[in-house]
Amino acid sequence: MAAPSGHVEGAAAGAGAGAGAGAGAGAGALEAVFPRDPELFADAFPEESRYRLCGRVLRIAQHHGGRLGVAAPVWEAALALCGYFEEQRLDFRGKSVIELGAGTGIVGILAALLGGDVTITDLPVALEQIRENVRRNVPPTLAPQPRVRPLSWGLDHAAFPSGYDVVLGADVVYLRETFPLLLATLRHLCGPRSVAYLSSKMRREHGAGFFFDTLLPQHFLTELVRRDDEQDINIYRVTCRPEG
Image (cartoon, rainbow, N blue to C red; front, top):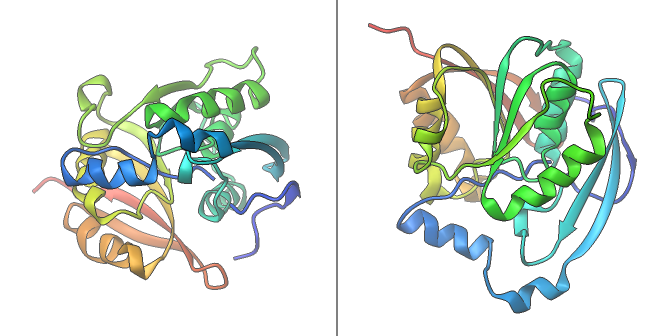
């Protein structure tokens, strides 16, 4: 698969660093990724990169440093998912959409610009960066405006309905401790007519293959719809198994 639409400007490596939260071991693992020590915030530095996607130029802020950790940059898997939207000419008009582990929010923002009624989620620490990028890229006249909300996987289900039309996630599979939490959240958000698009760098050390080849098919029908051999990125189309 060709690089999606082109990085116009900036030095970002890649989008929406996925991060749900967890309890117990999962929460502890994520604390290592999102350190709370205020002394680590001092090394933060902002960067703006521009990406041409679906005929639009998105200006994406990335606040690198200890505070946001992996949530700060735009990752290749998110750009690949945005490129898939463009290649398939996906139309989100009239559809309820939720993005998990959004990081910068680039995937959810593009879905909103393509007509979706979008909710963009991540851990609370990442929300201000997402809101900034929504302000940068979404015209105030656009209706509906994308919502930015905290979602800790496995914990915050009561705040979100089931049966979204579309569920999106880019590079949300990288901590084995969170796999059960992510699966629980996907099972809550997806209904019989839902479609999830999950894009992932297939990092062996993080168990991506195990998640997509073994765990996810236990609960969903999964189809590999795009493979980028050069970047080792897979995009999966995920739907619920028929009842019975």
